Image (cartoon, rainbow, N blue to C red; front, side, top):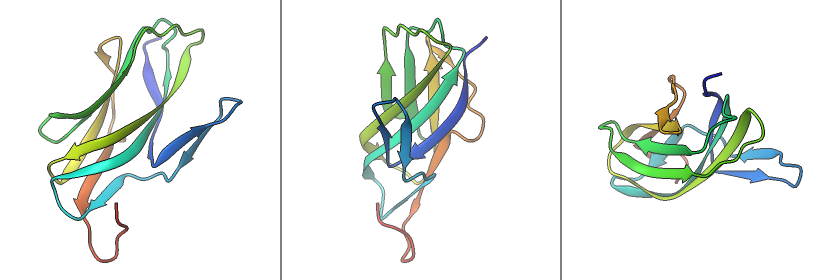
Length: 133
């Protein structure tokens, strides 16, 4: 089976308990910011990837609309004993230079997984009636 993403979410944080259960706190898809450029203090990406029993590396990249990488995280030397994996990644101090759509790209052993339209977040100007990030 070729690796693919079966679940994707953005959250404020992900908590993993002693039984290896994940709790996603503050699920969202939009950052409301006062201005750009700005720095996003932190956000979490949670993925469930299936078909990865032979995978050695997983890399997650966040790109802006121009395709520039604004954040990256990788997991290497994986020794998986099952065909699926949950990946919870916390990105911190991510520099954002423009408003718009940011895509989350996932690579398994350097091969990009099909992202569909759900693996993104949007950065928009904050208005008086939106939360402050």
